[in-house]
Length: 75
Length: 189
Image 1 (cartoon, helix red, strand yellow):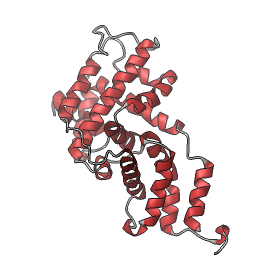
Image 2 (tube, helix red, strand yellow):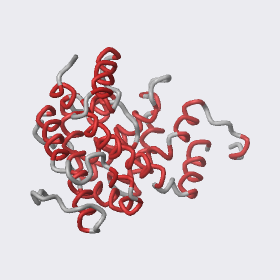
Image 3 (cartoon, chains in turn purple, brown):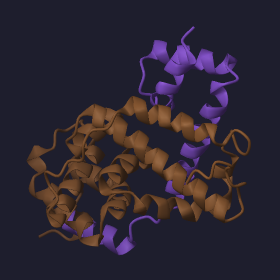
Image 4 (tube, rainbow over the protein chains, first blue to last red):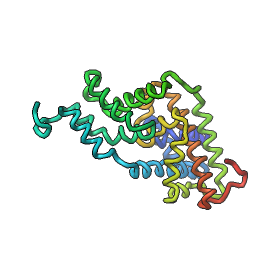
């Protein structure tokens, strides 16, 4: 089993899905059993979720801009 | 010239239009309105440089950032590469300070924090903001982000990890000031 230090050092990579599949599985298995690492995983996950929610609330492009671009593209 | 309604956009043009929202968000966090339009003008002028089948959004993000950097006369400026491992350890340190109050990050689910997220984002230096917008708002991989920003993959990691820690510090300070979170005992701010 990998160490807590290894998990913490790669936690962001894990949350971003940037690790090799075997490493992803190792960290998932560690988090499922480790009472020390799991809270930090949840903490960082909640933080990233706040950003995902924020993205949904951002204003879309103004319709006037979309129309200008459409005209620019098709003419 | 055919009326607009009779002209069918090509696949390339369809991709450009499909990426409008993503480019809008990216430009919004980099700079101002002219960047968006210049991005599209430049994309149309250099359409032959786009490789069909590749990620059109990433290509547009690259153009967008170059337009921004040119406008800001900041091209070529590079902050020192930090150590991503140290940043990951620092994140653990920040989390350790919350053991007695909010170890699971419930505060990030508070609706009152939504406004603070955008404010915290705009306070970040551009080098960090670009990375966090690419990865956390636009779901781009580290490799795609490195390519768009023209930096090494290790630089993306270290900037991203630092940016997230700075954002967390900012949001936690906001939450403490707003009474959403008990103030940390060590006074870490």
